[in-house]
Image (cartoon, rainbow, N blue to C red; front, side):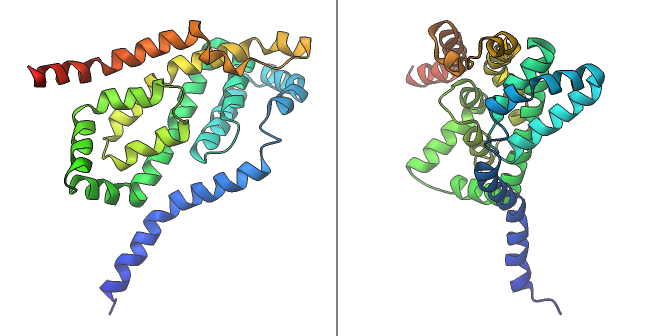
Length: 242
């Protein structure tokens, strides 16, 4: 007979396996792939990449989306370089569409792995908590759309963390996917447009300005979108006070 007491812990460990694999690959990749997923590597291989794209456009699109998805799904270094590459190879459009699609798929894979592992259990514990923890959880639940868009729009929130946090908060999958896809569009368009201009940057022997997203002309509109996303939360707060 099967010992039911031993089966449950074994199932728990198996459910944690996908997320543990992601963490292990992310750590390994941080030490082994940094030189291969870099601006220098893109610069050195730019002519080969352009020639391959011109000869095999559809294959290049599929390969690019697949590689970008893997980079995001496993938390590998080089997501920014991948976004620049999307612009370099495919221009701002459809490059931004390819970038957003790949990033959304990769982020969804992390979300599902974390939720399947321990996200559901942690979410249940938070739901059953009392006091301040319960109030915070309830506040997030009441304003999930706003909170999800803020996580994506604010540049200061690391993308990897923004992928994980919703898995602990019992966020429905459709809300996560929709808010991720549309929430990362502003930043993706900015960096894709930078990538689209890399030809001139390479010709001058310079490096791209990756801090452009923090410049006022870019940051202020994104902060404006963030405030717009917070508007339902602000209105609810005023109604409660009234």
